[in-house]
Length: 74
Image (cartoon, rainbow, N blue to C red; front, side, top):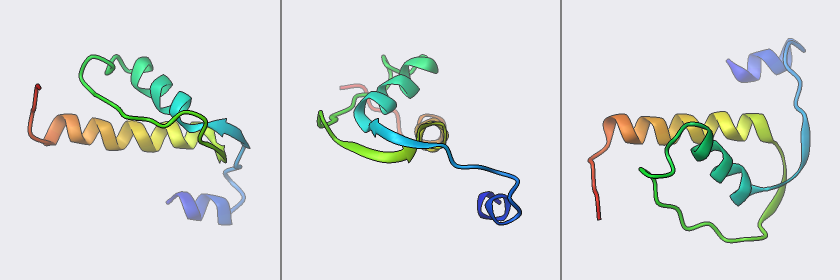
């Protein structure tokens, strides 16, 4: 669906150089998942991305893992 939106010029990509670890942490914090998800994120990894789309992707992956994955508390 996302590709179709780009093809139809209905969606725009807003890219900027972004710290990926910071983006992932912000996604987890925004959804209140920092106490449920442990991360090992290298500092200083930067990429030119659409930060909003990275947020949606990470939220979908983590949300699905929390809902459907095994619960491990260690």
